[in-house]
Image (tube, rainbow, N blue to C red; front, side, top):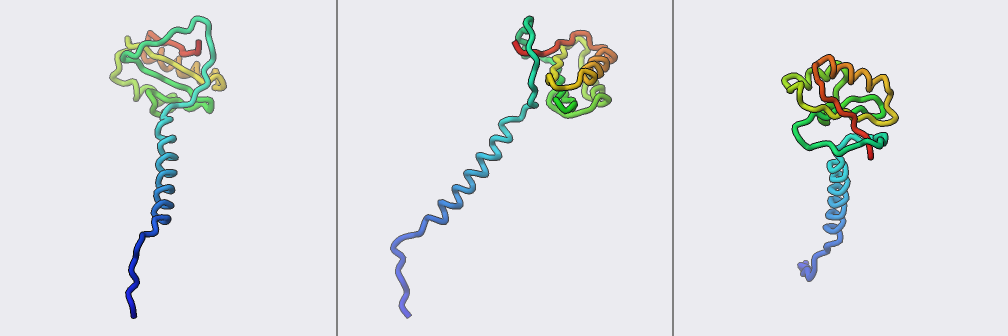
Length: 125
């Protein structure tokens, strides 16, 4: 029996594996990069840029889900997220234009009940 000598290495399987890994990395990177709550904001003529200071951001998605600083909650859970926050700090309330107005009023009522005075409504310019 004679031993065969290998003059080259077949790299096609390695290239296939690398391409599969590249597809997996690119697919997961697009999900990680989004990381924002997709809202379709209504437009307003008096819209201004909001400051990037210590502000509380509350979002209402089109399906009615509420997010406080990016964390999902419900109307009753808003108080637990805002516990220990300064009631003088500004609150930026953004709601998808397809969200129910009733949900918006419910969140606004909770904020007023918790003593927050500076509530800003986020719109597009």
